[in-house]
Length: 217
Image: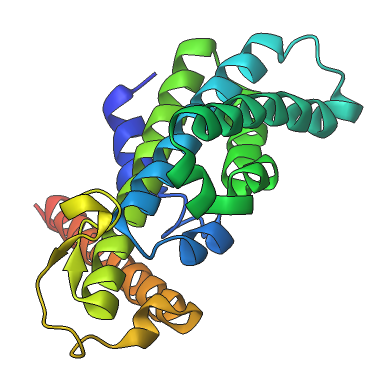
Protein backbone atom coordinates (compact mmCIF):
# COMPACT_ATOMS: atom_id res chain seq x y z
CA UNK A 1 0.00 0.00 0.00
CA UNK A 2 1.55 3.29 -1.16
CA UNK A 3 -0.32 6.14 0.55
CA UNK A 4 1.46 8.88 -1.43
CA UNK A 5 0.66 7.17 -4.74
CA UNK A 6 -2.98 6.71 -3.75
CA UNK A 7 -3.22 10.39 -2.81
CA UNK A 8 -1.66 11.57 -6.09
CA UNK A 9 -3.84 9.17 -8.08
CA UNK A 10 -7.02 10.47 -6.46
CA UNK A 11 -6.01 14.11 -6.81
CA UNK A 12 -4.30 14.10 -10.20
CA UNK A 13 -3.29 10.96 -12.06
CA UNK A 14 -6.59 9.06 -11.65
CA UNK A 15 -8.87 11.94 -10.75
CA UNK A 16 -12.43 10.63 -11.07
CA UNK A 17 -13.63 13.66 -13.05
CA UNK A 18 -10.74 14.94 -15.16
CA UNK A 19 -9.05 11.61 -15.94
CA UNK A 20 -11.60 8.82 -15.44
CA UNK A 21 -14.41 11.10 -16.71
CA UNK A 22 -16.94 9.79 -14.18
CA UNK A 23 -19.79 11.58 -12.43
CA UNK A 24 -20.24 14.08 -15.24
CA UNK A 25 -23.95 14.70 -14.61
CA UNK A 26 -23.69 15.91 -11.03
CA UNK A 27 -20.41 17.69 -11.74
CA UNK A 28 -22.03 19.98 -14.29
CA UNK A 29 -25.45 20.27 -12.68
CA UNK A 30 -24.69 21.44 -9.14
CA UNK A 31 -21.51 23.50 -9.56
CA UNK A 32 -23.22 26.90 -9.54
CA UNK A 33 -22.30 27.99 -5.99
CA UNK A 34 -19.48 27.12 -3.61
CA UNK A 35 -22.02 25.85 -1.06
CA UNK A 36 -23.32 23.26 -3.53
CA UNK A 37 -19.86 22.11 -4.56
CA UNK A 38 -18.54 21.61 -1.04
CA UNK A 39 -21.75 19.93 0.11
CA UNK A 40 -21.89 17.53 -2.82
CA UNK A 41 -18.17 16.80 -2.67
CA UNK A 42 -18.18 15.96 1.02
CA UNK A 43 -21.33 13.85 0.64
CA UNK A 44 -19.69 11.77 -2.09
CA UNK A 45 -16.47 11.53 -0.05
CA UNK A 46 -18.29 10.14 3.00
CA UNK A 47 -20.41 7.70 1.00
CA UNK A 48 -17.48 6.56 -1.15
CA UNK A 49 -15.25 5.93 1.86
CA UNK A 50 -17.88 4.02 3.85
CA UNK A 51 -18.98 2.00 0.82
CA UNK A 52 -15.37 1.07 0.04
CA UNK A 53 -14.80 -0.07 3.63
CA UNK A 54 -17.90 -2.27 3.77
CA UNK A 55 -17.41 -3.73 0.30
CA UNK A 56 -13.78 -4.54 1.11
CA UNK A 57 -14.91 -6.10 4.39
CA UNK A 58 -17.52 -8.27 2.64
CA UNK A 59 -15.63 -8.95 -0.59
CA UNK A 60 -14.86 -12.58 0.24
CA UNK A 61 -18.46 -13.51 0.99
CA UNK A 62 -20.29 -11.57 -1.76
CA UNK A 63 -21.17 -14.01 -4.59
CA UNK A 64 -19.46 -12.96 -7.79
CA UNK A 65 -22.57 -13.27 -9.98
CA UNK A 66 -24.57 -10.78 -7.88
CA UNK A 67 -21.75 -8.53 -6.73
CA UNK A 68 -23.00 -5.41 -8.56
CA UNK A 69 -26.45 -5.72 -6.98
CA UNK A 70 -24.82 -6.12 -3.56
CA UNK A 71 -22.63 -3.07 -4.14
CA UNK A 72 -25.69 -0.98 -5.02
CA UNK A 73 -27.51 -2.12 -1.87
CA UNK A 74 -24.53 -1.09 0.29
CA UNK A 75 -24.17 2.25 -1.49
CA UNK A 76 -27.92 2.92 -1.30
CA UNK A 77 -27.86 2.38 2.46
CA UNK A 78 -25.17 5.00 3.00
CA UNK A 79 -26.80 7.40 0.53
CA UNK A 80 -30.04 7.17 2.50
CA UNK A 81 -28.23 7.97 5.75
CA UNK A 82 -26.46 10.99 4.23
CA UNK A 83 -29.65 12.19 2.53
CA UNK A 84 -31.65 12.05 5.77
CA UNK A 85 -28.82 13.72 7.70
CA UNK A 86 -28.73 16.61 5.21
CA UNK A 87 -32.51 17.00 5.41
CA UNK A 88 -32.30 17.13 9.20
CA UNK A 89 -29.23 19.32 9.73
CA UNK A 90 -28.67 21.18 6.43
CA UNK A 91 -32.11 21.55 4.84
CA UNK A 92 -30.99 24.41 2.58
CA UNK A 93 -28.23 22.27 1.09
CA UNK A 94 -30.57 19.30 0.74
CA UNK A 95 -33.09 21.47 -1.09
CA UNK A 96 -30.41 22.99 -3.32
CA UNK A 97 -28.91 19.66 -4.36
CA UNK A 98 -32.33 18.09 -4.80
CA UNK A 99 -32.38 14.71 -6.53
CA UNK A 100 -28.62 14.66 -7.01
CA UNK A 101 -28.09 13.33 -3.48
CA UNK A 102 -30.32 10.23 -4.00
CA UNK A 103 -28.77 9.81 -7.44
CA UNK A 104 -25.38 9.19 -5.79
CA UNK A 105 -26.62 5.57 -5.62
CA UNK A 106 -25.90 5.26 -9.34
CA UNK A 107 -22.90 7.59 -9.40
CA UNK A 108 -20.27 5.89 -11.55
CA UNK A 109 -17.44 7.07 -9.30
CA UNK A 110 -18.66 5.11 -6.29
CA UNK A 111 -19.69 1.98 -8.17
CA UNK A 112 -16.50 2.13 -10.23
CA UNK A 113 -14.22 2.27 -7.18
CA UNK A 114 -16.18 -0.53 -5.53
CA UNK A 115 -15.68 -2.76 -8.55
CA UNK A 116 -12.11 -1.82 -9.48
CA UNK A 117 -10.54 -1.28 -6.05
CA UNK A 118 -12.52 -2.10 -2.90
CA UNK A 119 -13.48 -5.58 -4.10
CA UNK A 120 -9.80 -6.44 -4.62
CA UNK A 121 -8.02 -4.72 -1.71
CA UNK A 122 -7.91 -4.59 2.07
CA UNK A 123 -9.99 -2.37 4.33
CA UNK A 124 -7.36 0.31 5.05
CA UNK A 125 -6.30 0.66 1.43
CA UNK A 126 -9.95 0.84 0.36
CA UNK A 127 -10.72 3.48 2.98
CA UNK A 128 -7.78 5.61 1.81
CA UNK A 129 -8.85 5.13 -1.81
CA UNK A 130 -12.33 6.41 -0.94
CA UNK A 131 -10.93 9.42 0.92
CA UNK A 132 -8.44 10.40 -1.78
CA UNK A 133 -10.83 9.85 -4.68
CA UNK A 134 -13.42 11.87 -2.77
CA UNK A 135 -10.92 14.68 -2.22
CA UNK A 136 -10.06 14.69 -5.92
CA UNK A 137 -13.75 14.90 -6.81
CA UNK A 138 -14.38 17.68 -4.28
CA UNK A 139 -11.41 19.75 -5.50
CA UNK A 140 -12.71 19.70 -9.08
CA UNK A 141 -16.22 20.63 -7.90
CA UNK A 142 -14.86 23.57 -5.89
CA UNK A 143 -12.78 24.81 -8.83
CA UNK A 144 -15.78 24.65 -11.14
CA UNK A 145 -18.04 26.32 -8.57
CA UNK A 146 -15.63 29.21 -8.05
CA UNK A 147 -15.19 29.79 -11.80
CA UNK A 148 -18.87 29.49 -12.70
CA UNK A 149 -20.10 31.57 -9.77
CA UNK A 150 -17.55 34.31 -10.42
CA UNK A 151 -18.19 34.49 -14.17
CA UNK A 152 -21.93 33.90 -13.91
CA UNK A 153 -22.91 35.91 -10.82
CA UNK A 154 -19.82 37.97 -10.09
CA UNK A 155 -19.72 36.61 -6.52
CA UNK A 156 -17.66 34.24 -4.38
CA UNK A 157 -18.86 31.92 -1.63
CA UNK A 158 -22.52 31.75 -2.63
CA UNK A 159 -24.60 29.95 -0.04
CA UNK A 160 -21.90 30.35 2.64
CA UNK A 161 -20.65 33.92 2.94
CA UNK A 162 -22.51 37.21 3.36
CA UNK A 163 -25.78 35.66 4.46
CA UNK A 164 -25.73 33.15 1.64
CA UNK A 165 -25.51 35.74 -1.13
CA UNK A 166 -21.74 35.48 -1.43
CA UNK A 167 -19.19 38.28 -1.60
CA UNK A 168 -19.80 40.45 -4.66
CA UNK A 169 -16.62 40.92 -6.69
CA UNK A 170 -17.98 42.18 -10.02
CA UNK A 171 -20.76 44.76 -10.36
CA UNK A 172 -24.18 43.42 -11.25
CA UNK A 173 -24.80 43.16 -14.98
CA UNK A 174 -21.18 42.48 -15.93
CA UNK A 175 -21.04 38.66 -15.42
CA UNK A 176 -22.16 36.33 -18.19
CA UNK A 177 -25.38 34.65 -17.01
CA UNK A 178 -24.74 31.71 -19.34
CA UNK A 179 -21.95 30.45 -17.07
CA UNK A 180 -24.46 29.32 -14.45
CA UNK A 181 -26.63 27.67 -17.10
CA UNK A 182 -25.95 24.13 -18.42
CA UNK A 183 -23.79 25.44 -21.26
CA UNK A 184 -21.53 27.06 -18.67
CA UNK A 185 -21.08 23.70 -16.98
CA UNK A 186 -19.98 22.08 -20.23
CA UNK A 187 -17.55 24.90 -21.07
CA UNK A 188 -16.02 25.02 -17.60
CA UNK A 189 -15.63 21.26 -17.34
CA UNK A 190 -14.03 21.13 -20.80
CA UNK A 191 -11.48 23.77 -19.79
CA UNK A 192 -10.69 22.00 -16.51
CA UNK A 193 -10.22 18.64 -18.25
CA UNK A 194 -8.06 20.24 -20.96
CA UNK A 195 -5.85 21.92 -18.33
CA UNK A 196 -5.43 18.67 -16.41
CA UNK A 197 -4.59 16.67 -19.54
CA UNK A 198 -2.07 19.33 -20.61
CA UNK A 199 -0.29 19.12 -17.24
CA UNK A 200 -0.32 15.30 -17.27
CA UNK A 201 1.06 15.14 -20.82
CA UNK A 202 3.73 17.72 -20.00
CA UNK A 203 4.79 15.77 -16.91
CA UNK A 204 4.88 12.53 -18.88
CA UNK A 205 7.03 14.12 -21.59
CA UNK A 206 9.49 15.35 -18.95
CA UNK A 207 9.73 11.90 -17.41
CA UNK A 208 10.33 10.29 -20.80
CA UNK A 209 13.02 12.87 -21.61
CA UNK A 210 14.70 12.27 -18.26
CA UNK A 211 14.56 8.52 -18.88
CA UNK A 212 16.23 8.91 -22.27
CA UNK A 213 18.98 11.03 -20.73
CA UNK A 214 19.64 8.36 -18.11
CA UNK A 215 19.85 5.68 -20.79
CA UNK A 216 22.22 7.84 -22.85
CA UNK A 217 24.54 8.26 -19.86
